[in-house]
Length: 106
Figure 1: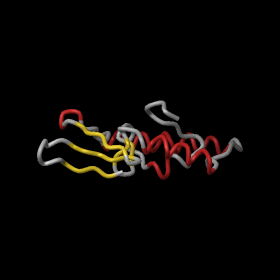
Figure 2: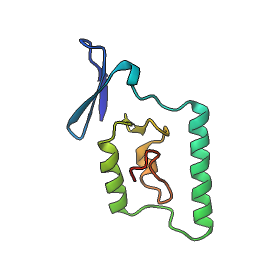
Figure 3: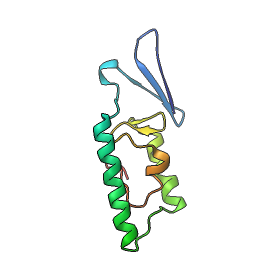
């Protein structure tokens, strides 16, 4: 997905999976601040380490990854390969079995 600013309306326009959507500038999704993103990464690492130490599967299977990416591709929070709710890169988050969508979609 990509996004650009529409110079006629000054809105942010995004395209995901061929479906356009528009954010008014006041509603434009923003990434969490750096402190929150660091906290999110540390929590993910902690959960992943616990799973690995208890013998649980760390990497999601290919079908799960594909399903998660398809959901994210259509989500309004998916901006430039990242989730604007948590700040994570989808490429990595979707591949980890222990991760979940902050918006509750997967």
